[in-house]
Image (cartoon, rainbow, N blue to C red; front, side, top):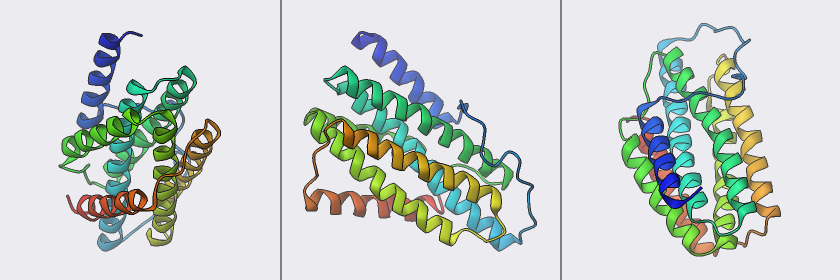
Length: 208
């Protein structure tokens, strides 16, 4: 695929991501789980957490698209593309769950996408090893974030829990795949900066 084709594909993906026109390639892990009765506070809390998860998937689409665009090695490009497709499943699942909770995605999704695409582009321009290191650290932090959501989701919200658990397993696999391709460890200040930026995003997306 030449650069023009990549640009068209990336633009199409960006538009579908921020407008919510996404489709999962795998079955929703919550498809056979019955909806349980939750009070207004519990539903609002679940919706806030799933909105944060949805934003994370918007960012994942942007990151993998930009990193794949600028990757040097075909094996790296292919792995980033595989991970991107699985993250699109997450995007569709979380969007569906938000609708079931009578809620909506973040109003700032276009901003999240542009910011993440820019960060991914910078990481990729540093070289494949550094870009893969960024993937490993991102997925490590996302795994911790999803673990916290499993603790914080209402106990009765089995549907959201099933989605988050499958997402967590996939994120671990993505990080392992990136590591196996030769990822380098990121400096401690960079990891701390990533964590701080993620904190700002999650705190904002819970409400907006």
